[in-house]
Amino acid sequence: MTTSRKTLTAAGLAALLALSLLALFPALASQSTHAAPASKWTKAPAKTQPLPVTVQGATVAAVPPSIKDTAAYMTLTNRSKQPIKLVGAATPLAAHPMLMITTRSGGMMGMKMVPSLTIPAGGKLTLHRGGDHVMLRGLKRPLKVGETVTLTLSAEDGRTLKVSATVKKN
Image 1 (cartoon, rainbow, N blue to C red):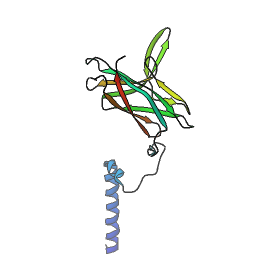
Image 2: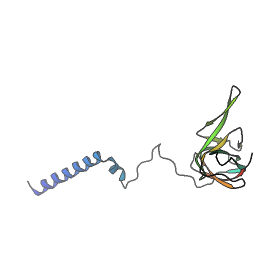
Image 3: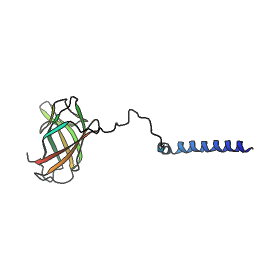
Image 4: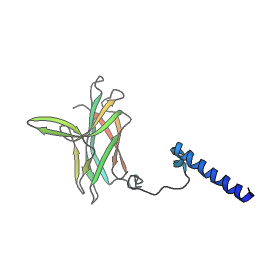
């Protein structure tokens, strides 16, 4: 074999080995230094502008120390001309904050977790006892009346809103 033929054969074997390794270890393929093209599954980056929302009367219901669930209530006012869809809540105080609605059927009331709550354009969303609210499940410690709890509400576009809520008795 000539030198150029040996080089081509070696290069071909190296390429075959590389393809075999990628087939056996697909995670290696994802470690490329090239940016992947955007897809419909790629989450858009969070916008840098704050949410145009004001918060009034933010409270968390005080519960006895043995109770591990409570709720947060407030009125959210959207100052923009576009509706704002809230898609989540977070707090270091609870393991599972959830957006909830209250349902009524046949004279019975119940609660249902929902994927989102919408603040209408130029309007208000009132989260209140017996209505829509943020459920705080799995409290990590007992609450003290008068303490301030920080909640973070997340909008569909990635922006967030920090809310300071006061723990109050019913």
